[in-house]
Image (cartoon, rainbow, N blue to C red):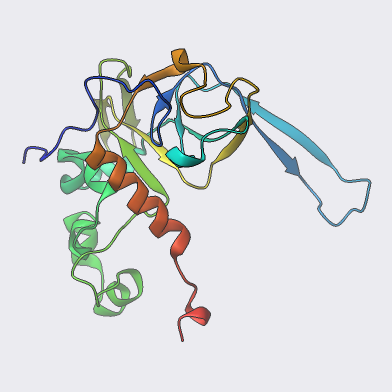
Length: 215
């Protein structure tokens, strides 16, 4: 099945936008081993310099020397065991039927009780793999091998992903607004539809309610 919309804009706006792919930035996270150790905490700083990252600050909130970013990561091999995903990994970005979210083999082995626990059967379609959003292939993004001996997977892809659990804050004095920023770091811009898909899935990720809050 062909994609119904293009994923990236052919021309870039002269401004930073939510969902943009950027490069040349350093991301860091404080890692605390024992948060209850008073002032003598055991901690270290993890620093990474990803080749590509994605802006997750809303367009209207870019500025004040601050950006929210998530690194572009290689996709997970297990997704290629699902024919529905293998045909088009960006399907992970949008709501789908419960039976489309797992491979036919896994689905046939599940009991009705297991399906009830794992899927929201009250909805005809819903998000799955809620932490992830897939970025489609592009000439700027290099392809890489996807291998798993245990799952008998050996293929190649140009798709990448972001993980909503891995969002970093970057401070840069050159970013005073979306249009007053070092635009040379901007490589790709999402289409309006793809940016809407990202906004909807990110919103859904943060809007989830635990069972005790749903009564």
